[in-house]
Length: 258
Picture 1: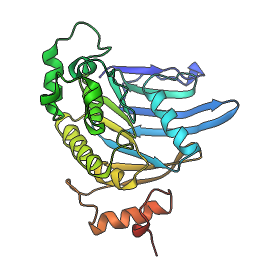
Picture 2: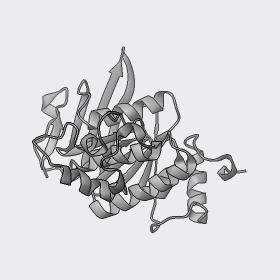
Picture 3: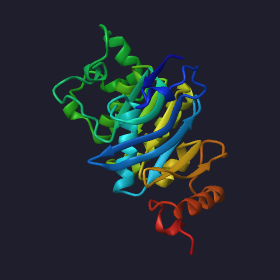
Picture 4: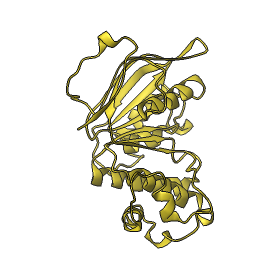
């Protein structure tokens, strides 16, 4: 798999080797106005692994979004080394669709070359929106708009899918349906996924591994060896959420240790 190298500040730290991981981050530092938002971060993600990144709002929230921007190649003012697949795509909390364009045209927006409508229709079918192909984007519900955003990422055939709290603005039933869809798409495609979320339940339902970010680095990690589909009332998940409760603040009050 081709890799996209974000050059380290010190070129002597670069080693020209094949990437054994889908994502490799070594000693990453990102500062704003002299303050480190990401501080010597170390991270490896396996090929095909689904990783969720949680943490408190504020500095940790900014650090998580900054990390996604760096992995996406949108922020290169860094120290350290970052190796990621060349083919990557991002879906964010705000879909950022062109409201006057038809749905299929939004899916193909900024795609290189001259892709045809059939390509958009295939991926829209995959996310359950084949019946909305010709609709104007301004007529979509919030859940439909988020699925179009996911389709726009998937149409790029990414080896790495970066998700920045994509379901955060959805109501509870729509969010549950969106989670299920994402899990199904990931299992079919087998791409590597890094999901930033403020919802610990979402993290443990979807991910192979949950990372807690604190102080600009990874402070805690939980591996989830539970078969899918998962039930949030499963005692094993309840225990896992209780462990996470000591490391971040997004767990429901009724699941906190008494």
